Image (tube, rainbow, N blue to C red; front, side, top):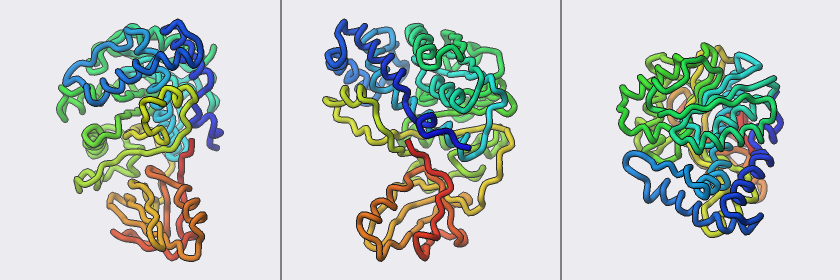
Length: 387
């Protein structure tokens, strides 16, 4: 049984309130006045992550209280939600289950906890009796914030331990075994690792993963970061280092990567927290979706997939007389067309909004580069995440 929607993707109110309080402490103002004062900090971070992105090492922006609060109010809810979507894919679609009801989580390159706390929050909502959250990051300030953030959101069912260390250096990692390891937006910072170096990095992660544990790697939806992750994912799957659970449906190479025209990433609708929307008034970022790429690995035996399953890898287009989208079925790209004649514009729009990039659909027709369905009833939605 799937978890309730609020548990699957909802950003907890306690999390939002925690970071608003951090904004008030950082600015010595209250409520909206604190958030207003926070806007320049969020702008600086936005530039740092995009136009002013350093070629090598990122500065410890978490050491400055205003930047830490700005990250917590604006960027952290998005990463929390991205992690929730990726974990839902493993739990609700692939049927992965934690090896223990006392889950042990390693958040590698944790920052102030967006990914690790998201994993713990969902596992507790699903019935875990307790979670142990271990976090590693180069920023001592981020780790201090993570301890308080995790305790505020997860309550007395979490044990938190932190370690200052480099996510690229396995010697700095805990020598323990974990049920879930999450490396959120870390790979793009490991620029010195070539393809072989990345495989050694994943091999070290496997050493610390329970035999039936789950490895989650998340990256930005940019072409360069998404394709680098996809190449790594394809190689891990091809060499059998770990079993790939997603988002790819099998171990076949990604046809989008081979084609070189488009790249695999998710685009998921969500509802941004009120404080995030407030801070966005001057940034004017499009907060209707969270975009990201991810890869899931585990050697746990999971239910067999429907061989007719198709993963949607494009936006859904509304064109004259039909809906059209691109999917991947049995390792090959497929254009799927769904006739909409006889439907009202409103009905067509509602149909298009029932699924999105990253969802899994199925149909009865034989695999082919182009499939034209006979009508809407022939389209079956197997998995569709909703925030």
